[in-house]
Length: 206
Image 1 (cartoon, rainbow, N blue to C red):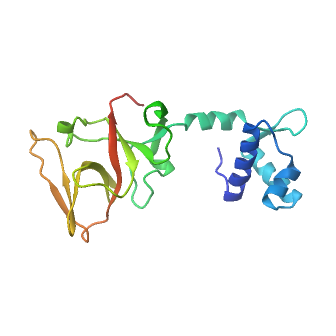
Image 2 (cartoon, rainbow, N blue to C red; image 1 turned 120 degrees about the vertical axis):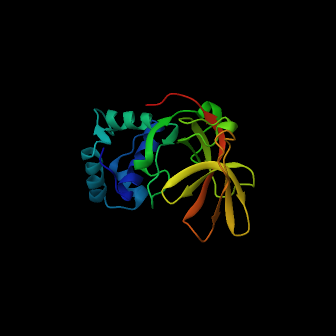
Image 3 (cartoon, rainbow, N blue to C red; image 1 turned 30 degrees about the vertical axis):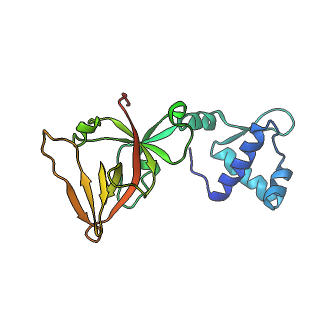
C-alpha cells in the first residue's frame, strides 16, 4: 500500500478510532476535529481511498476501512523480527523488519520490544544458538554483565556487556571456540547499546 503523509495518517487514525467505537464520523466532524475546511477534508479522504485505506459502503456515514488495510494491519500485529540492520537507519526501520510474530500472551503488548535473529555461535554457552530469536527490550541502559544488543556501525551483535570508563567490553559465551572478549573504545567506533535481551526463542520462521 502507498505510504501516507503525516496529515493523512492523523486523519486515518481519527476515522479508525471512531469506527472502532462503531461511530463512523462525517466529513464535517473530521473537519471540526482537525480545524480544517470541509473541502480539505474531502481531498484528504479522497487520497485515503485512492491509496487503498478507506472505502465507501452503503448507508449513512459510509466510510469504512478497506479489506486490504485490515489485512495489512493483521500481518503487523505482534513484535517485529529484525534480520539485518542498515547503517544510519533506526533498528526498527521498515526495511530491516522481516515479519511480525505475535507473542503478546508471553510478553504483553509493548512497542519497546522486538525480536532479533541471531547469526553465529558466539553465545551458545548461554543457550543462544545460531538462528534463534532473542527477545530484546529497547533501552540504552544495560547493567554490567547483562546480555544486550550492541550496534556496531551496521552490525547488531548479542553479547554480555560491561561498561568501563572509556570503553565497552563485549563478552562472548563459547568456551569451546575460544572466543575472546572484545574491548571497544567509546571514541574509536560508532557504537551504541540498543537493547537488553529478555528472552530467547527457537522457532522456525520464513
